[in-house]
Length: 127
Image (tube, rainbow, N blue to C red):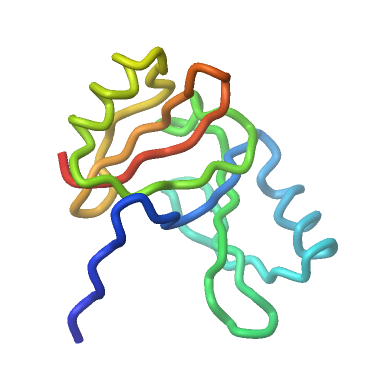
């Protein structure tokens, strides 16, 4: 089955990267009802959070380690872009900054940016 193309500008994913991912997976399990599923990261596990009603993976909770050490501890949404390189250039030209990355994620690349007001998000798309 062919995968549907991603809508440019659409929200693709959300995750939380924190020092205490083990504790917070339990917190969101109790508060929201999500069930954690381990994702092996080479010596430790991050977590996919599963909806109790649909069984769908709805978010991620990740450790702030290794390549994720520089990601701010907040819920991070990922937006689809047509060209990561062009979006980064526009971000910087308009007063934003690149917080982390760019780096590979599957067949695409992503980076974390901060807009001029201080808000943070991630951009995901082809280079």
